[in-house]
Image: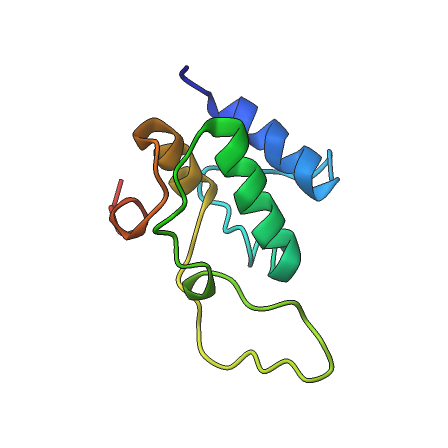
Length: 104
């Protein structure tokens, strides 16, 4: 099944419980949409299930910080992951470094 940007955007809005946020293809999941920690993990797993995307080679810690706490250390920059990366993952059936490191 071919999913559209609109269907992916609606899925993300539902998952983050924010139906008014503006989601574009270049929206960064963590920086622009505020998806991090456990919320990011839950979103990626729900994304995998809904869109039948293999995430077995997705290295979560490269793209998202841990759940914020009083002891959090957010040193170092995470790699960017955008809505467009998720759309590509749907098309390819997998979310991994190959998908995340391709330019469009």
